[in-house]
Length: 256
Image (cartoon, rainbow, N blue to C red):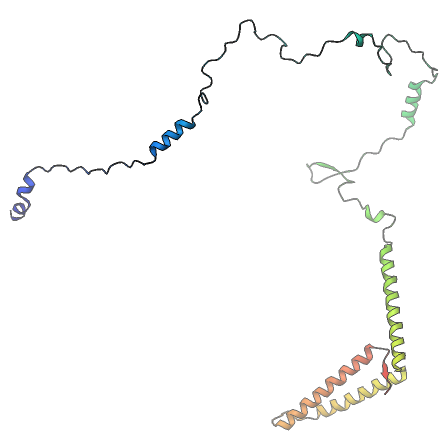
């Protein structure tokens, strides 16, 4: 009862009036009259609806057959009097004189030629699968055409020319080096000297290697480590020198 008495009120008993929202006044531009005036001033009469009065066509001017086709000008009498040019093709009424007639029997000659002529060879074809389409074998790329060419396997002309140019350039380079060495008065090492030099380098390498093999297994001190590194560098240098002399057969020595 207390909750029901709390809901009841004098304000709830009286009917409430619906308050409608007041709309603001509509916006009217101040330039509207000038715009209307300019539109009336620039408006063209009879622009969209066509002319007010249209001439009605006369019933006498009805459309006739072929009246719209272009008509050729009337032929003058002078043109009729002119003679027609001579035609290169004979007329139907002309009867040209026939030339010499041949007594050759073309039927028999054609029959003999057809009998004696060799039969045409069928075009070679290939099929991609059992029930597939047929293709010409010659254009398929399966026929070895390239290896049957006349110039197949022949060295091209530009390759031989390039080789000759390279040989010529190499010869010129060697000649220029020889001239330069002659100017510098350098001596060419002979084969015996080169062999003896190689033997001496190999002998030195063997001695260093023997000394390297005599080193102790454990290098626990700094002098031992330095001695080992020194022997390794000497061996590497000797190996490099031996390979260089083996690679170059001609060795030049500058005279001091």
